[in-house]
Length: 253
Ligand code: UDP
Image 1 (spheres, rainbow, N blue to C red):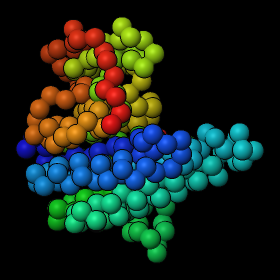
Image 2 (image 1 turned 90 degrees about the vertical axis):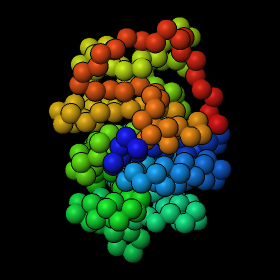
Image 3 (image 1 turned 180 degrees about the horizontal axis):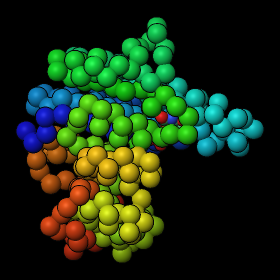
Image 4 (image 1 turned 180 degrees about the vertical axis):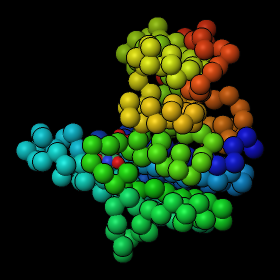
């Protein structure tokens, strides 16, 4: 096992599977299975899930709503996703705790750092809901901040693409994947890894990020075992060149 403690970031959109909105039951169980297998290796796992499959704060204006109100709606959307994942994990007999950045007493624990650490030490999968608990942030920022707070070894950003490419591989067939890249290069090349707030938090705290395809079975476990999967973003890399393989998207499973 390469990592003692990881923070796994999943986007809300990924939970939709093939649907246009909401949660896809098959995808949800798939993610729960992946997390269960990874947790069985003894690595401590914290999870942050987005809410984009239900509501995003930026949509508020289109609805004629106040932005801050919209952001809170987005945060509550992440709690709904977190509750779904918690339940799916429990179905598989994985011990979990859901800690929320916005207090929802009847549903989950409030986020208290020391509690989170204790849960992790006891081998429970900790899910952080409601992002940071403040508007104008994203769940990527929550993932970076919580990862730093709990001293995770790495942020694993599970996406439907198998890493960081020279261009958007969904639009540009000649895009090539980086096996490794530095924080500075990501900024120089203006590559879209996370929003700037989230990215800067990782950079300033020397917290590596791995972008990988969460929809490929076993990837999470392979990463934890130390196999090279996806793209590693870190301070220094000996090999920050794109791989020679042309970038082909892994189809969403
Ligand atoms: N959000 C917020 N503060 C946070 C985390 C999330 O205001 O700390 C809101 C924000 O409006 C965001 C929404 O919750 O649009 C859903 O999260 P996000 O868009 O990051 O989800 P993802 O794109 O990962 O599904």
